[in-house]
Amino acid sequence: MPGDSKENIRVQSWVVIVSLLLLFVKFIAYYSTHSIAILTDALESIVNVTAGFIGLYSLKVSARPQDANHPYGHGKIELVSAALEGSMIILAGGFIIYKSVINLIVPPQIEKLDFGILLVLFSGIANYFLGYYCLRISKKTGSIALKASGKHLITDTYSTIGIIIGLGLLYLTNWIWMDSLVASIFGLMIIYTGWKIIKSTISGIMDEADEELISDLVQSLNEKRRENWIDIHNLRILKYGNKLHLDCHFTVPWYLTVKEAQKEVEEVAKLAENQFGEVIELFVHIDGCQPHSCGLCIKSTCNHRKQDFVKKLTWDIKNITNNKSHRIEAKV
Image (cartoon, rainbow, N blue to C red; front, side, top):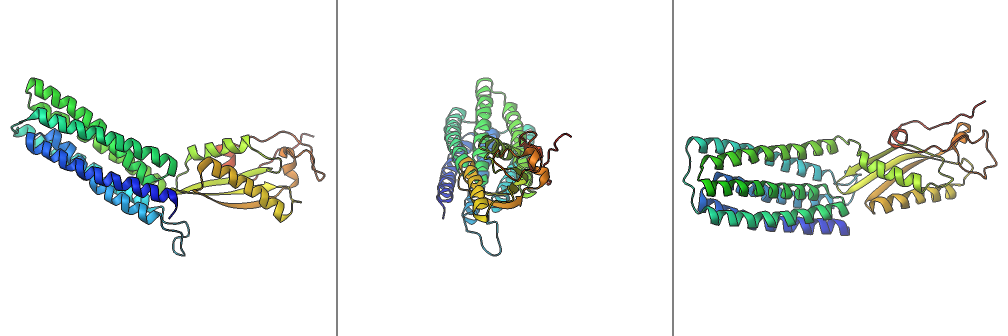
């Protein structure tokens, strides 16, 4: 199992363990106070635990090597995991709003609010640091599941802060309706968070282009461009879990030997690995240059030039992803 996969699984295991402990703490706070706002936090923790187990399973599956049935690996399972997590978040938010309305009609007896606030504060701080750690590791490893867990935990922290503020006002004013109001507001926020997670996973399942990834790579290609890199077009980056698959058409001088052309491909691969780490896999179709390529070819020592050099083509997201070789005709 690759090192990044092991680290993802280790961090996600801690997410599950800590979420279980915080779930216990929050339900103690709820049963001590009977506050619907604290129940909101406790239900969020149930989602955290369930999503944590799903995320852990998905990371173990996504770490499996490619096989005949899964030539691109098993990374898509992380998208399924994130979609399930988003769905559970939405369900939890809906239940919280429902419970808030019921409690407005039949207000509960709130007790030991100061004790409940302290327990919720402790759990919020723990969630924030765990979520921050998940996001930091996910940036390094590229794990979608770990990123979803980190965002979820940090969102949970923000919800906790709002709940504490609302409970503080309730503690000072004894306005019982404040409990349901706070819970309803954060129920809506939780639903919105769940929707954002689902929306991002739909983009991944539909293989929507990640413009940020392409933009970063294009910038590096322009900066480190070699004279034999005449043109690149039809560039695509697909993300499968923490793995990136890049394919493109790569134009080099037609007279290069296979070995020489392969060396240029290896240089592109090194550049991509420096940009994204070893989680990238390249599929490069090599094209020999054509007479219309001469206008943008920067190779000064070419003895086979058919047209004068006109200007260097600067690659950008639009032209490098277009499925058509580029040309700059010399003016007659």
